[in-house]
Length: 157
Image (cartoon, rainbow, N blue to C red; front, top):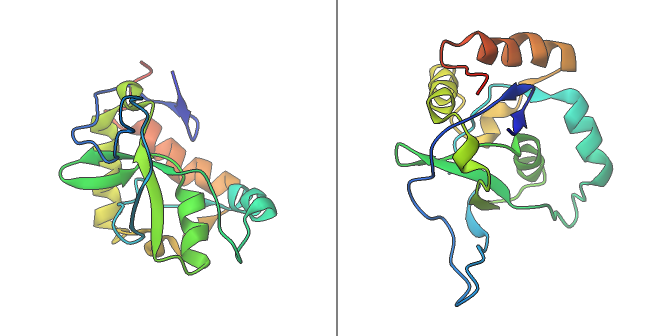
């Protein structure tokens, strides 16, 4: 089972297709959406991950893998790639490339819904709202991962 920030996830399929299908090949192609459209599913950015990503991220020519999303309650929700999305925001990007999360069958959608609610309650509703929420690895583990693991929706799978 896939790990996300130290906790395993398990769940249900995506509701809506986000990408075009290549004719006859069944391969998904990334879609470009406004950077303020995908909803974050975490409240913080891990500073150590940000530091590592800064090593390869080119602010003059941002190129990165498409960011996986889920479709939950009529919103695109980042299921991973918050650091890459945040770097794209810092680089001044107005759009980001998204793709349906390839592991969507394994994800714990109720837990993601709860994470989105936590974000909404703290006014973190777009990637730009993660500014001022970059924290040390220890703080990330204590304030985010531990919170997720303490949720009654957390399931070892």
